[in-house]
Amino acid sequence: METQTETLTPQPLPEDLKAHFDKFDLALCMSCGSCSSGCATSGAPGYEEWNTRKVLRLLALGQFQELVDHNFPWLCTGCGRCSYNCPMGIDIVPIMAHLKHLRPREKTPGTIHKGMLSNLETGNNLAIPLEDYLEGMIDLGAQMADEDCPGFYVPVDKKDADILFFPNSKEVFGDFEDQFWWWRIFYAAKENWTVPSEGWEAVDWALFSANYEGTRKLAQRKIDIMKDLNIGRMIMPDCGGGSYGCRAGLKNCIEVNEENAVDFVYLYEYLKELFEQGRIKVDKSVHAGKLHTWHDSCKHGRELDRHYGQAFFEEARWVLSQCVDDFIELQPNRAANYCCGAGGGNWPMPFEDQSAHHARFKADQLRRSKAEVIVVGCSNCRDQIMKRLPKYYPDLQYEVKYLWQIIAEALIIEPWPDDEIAKAEAEAKAQWERFGIDPEEVLNAY
Image (tube, rainbow, N blue to C red; front, top):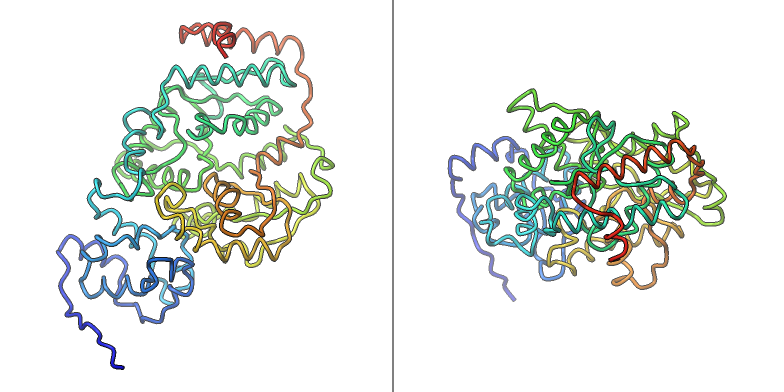
């Protein structure tokens, strides 16, 4: 039986696209397929005939509109394993991103564009009102103070704080207790920290939809908060995409105006500092008897290294070693690690089957490790490994914990002196008065 193949005639790209894609020198592509073999998305359900190599060849032939109209680029998690494999060093991730960028915004899959617009308009992806946000901080803060952190409250818009922290809207909206982990660390370290009242969203869905202007605006908003409150450093958001988007946006803002430069610290650096400075102590016995492993986030590792010359592989392992003794590496790991399958917006986007297909290598890694606790440093990785993988690979059995959760669960919290508790309670009272909120009314309502 003869098979018919379609012959494609090379077409010139429009001048603006040619100028953009010339930066990646697609002429270097040897059509070897190394990118596709490194990409776990190859052969995804419903996209069996699509892979990264095909995308590059179509683009080289000028068939950009077919790529813009097709959903395959949206399955790209931005993990960078394609570029890591490419013998010619072609940077493929931003190529896939630009194909997303060219899609009309109203045709962006799922809700990520709407979430990005909500973030720009309301300050967070889920349009959580300021009143609900603040009342949640009061209620949860009171719970922590009543349990074992007397004097604790959530400082909001605190001027001259040393650390600015950005919450994740899904935790503010639903996974409330997940906020306790960072708060307990701040409390134990006696950190001078704050969260913003407006524009507090940690996650950058503009990065997922390749909305360059949106990413720049979200970064500029963080810069403005830093300067308005005279903050020392901000912790880069824990979401891999959020931190990477913030880093990209900051770079763009600084290129426009050098005065936009602000000081920041990645969560791994910050947590390592706390241990090294003796500001927090832990009891390792809390985690004894369970085998732990570490999942390297693509945006905190391979991609951060490629584009900014900085990768957080060893810091996370060092921090984890302060908390647990029973540890095993996933194979492969660090720069060669497999993506969880949730990156690039594939956790919230409507491609669950394809995302789970991508994760088959991650599932196999976890299965072979026999680890009982998977430790992560990214909220999308955490949700994917905790919820989606067991759904599609039901033999998998493990717990999933954030790195900061591992620390918080083992913290040795030394009681604050009475005068420090009194000072914190007075600060909290003054803060809520500034916002026109009576904490007692809020707590009685809850």
